[in-house]
Length: 401
Image (cartoon, rainbow, N blue to C red):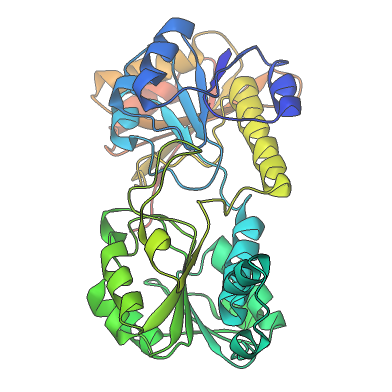
């Protein structure tokens, strides 16, 4: 297996990956030249962080079978093209959660105490205790979390330590044991969350349903003088509408992500953070701590190892979200051609196999195969299988409605 790494990746991680096969390290690659690099190397596995993986890259070589995003989000990867080509796409969820949560709290504290402005004035030789000694303090304030996934939960832990009250909005019901554990109160709507919070922090992925989830109308619901924290993905918040709200003095913002972010790690920037003093911002560095990068690298190594060794893809994000209606459980002798005969019989009846797993028992004399599909096979086919000399038992199971 050849692994192409098209972003920065720790040296130790590259050395460990090299034990599974050849590793080509090209951190300078970008969207424009990724396809050519894949075609040149005939890579089997591609590892990226911020590099965009478009449809052309997915079609660049028939060898490519797995793309790993060394991070949580996969909005920079063409999932449709990957699925059409039968290419697994996996990510490393939760491995950078603490890093993002720490930055979220850092932005909140910096805004409340106006740390950036005070530091800049001190560097200019200005001591202005009267101006910067008027912080509100965050104890007792209500923090509203939009989304309550892994990162939001880490934020909740830290906010509780500061004495904040917590509430969250999730479109799906949260188990009571989860909300009780984190001390958070679920609210029924995004509007209720925004109207009832002193600080709002965004923690949802970016997709069609979350594009401009927080726009002009939603920002108008927020309390005067409140704070919006956004460390999720650019596009979830309407940056233009946010700029207007900040400019009008309605709220302040702490941002790590933006719409139309520069693709390069260093570039000129003229966005919302450049023009508004009530916006504190960082250049999308939420996941960029040594601890997070180490955890992500370890997860990438695990994904690659188990894929190469066992054919298992952890955290695959582009598999069909559907349950098969039937499972055929075949206990059989571990002999060449037995499963091929079972699959051939299913094909004769036009039964399309959707999934298959085969387990071999100790001693390598017998195995058990579970095959899933939508169409119900005929009793005659099942009887044929049962009569096969190398098949020990056949059971057809139907999923509960």
